[in-house]
Length: 440
Image (cartoon, rainbow, N blue to C red; front, side, top):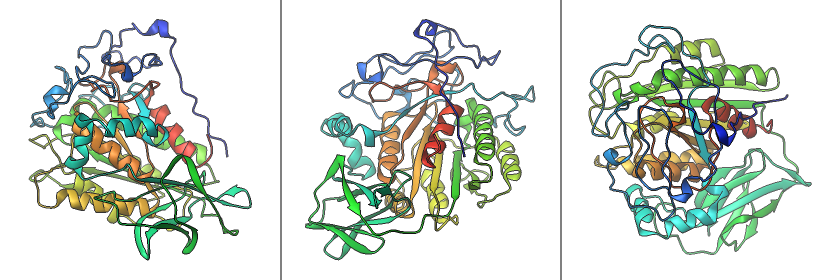
């Protein structure tokens, strides 16, 4: 099986190219030479919207905690709430009933904090960013990175548990590289050690210490390879504020799904689930579809959605995660399981135990080997950005964010990260999926 989705990158000389929303130009990408770690704001030349004025450095300007500071332009939804009307997104990639939208237009970046751990720890050492740990009740700094091997071969989908005595603290499954990420004190102070690590029910290492760049190597006896299955789930915010980008996202995700189906061929069984959520009081809270191998039907379900409802900034993210993780039948054995969470707003933090429920679902996702990959759209503020990074760290995922380079939709906040490469969103997601099954 061969996956090939090379990133198409523009030369730096094209940085000044103006992208046109009306013409749907899709031939441009650029490498972010400075990176948002320089403190310069992300911008889109020729775009009708301005980029975020929130600094992008690890010690950048402090965040006010409101969506209005996330750089929304006139073309995007206000952080104060969702639009009341529906977007004309029910034609499956059409805009206002016009011509179908071509994929390869939305631009995005990716940042995996697990691969830049010193950078992340530095952020968590600064009050302006560390405060979000208390907001969302995630404390990620006590990390135990593990690689499981058998006879010199990395073991995929092994069950790894970090224990304090007999009490399990965190469970995860290894990815295609044999890696698993475990944490002590994720939701509060760490339990007293010493800590041990077990693989597939057998204790392999005792008195282990935190590890990151140099993971703990665990050697086990030969085991059976996992089933050749790829589980892909999409949970998509369809509230009114997503209307500026939803049509385009539908086209991009449909292209990703179709390419993965083609490239997987007969080597992998592709199981797909597309799901949607809004908020309390809307036409629906969560519209869910079970995993299916009928890819055409899933694509039709994706194309049939539109944007509407909402009304305030937070949305039913917790309910969406609850459905995604606990309400679907994930494969017991699989090469890869990925849950893409596409959204532009945070969960409600003022509902009784809403955050606690969300945290439990994230912990369950890690134990099931489900890697959460957020796709942050226009309107995301700093608090939401860090929430999304917490949940991808906890599950071994990565953070994906739309950029303003395409000129589509509202402006996009400059993430607080280092240098990154701007890619077409569809290429980026295909690359991530391909890497997850060892085919990139």
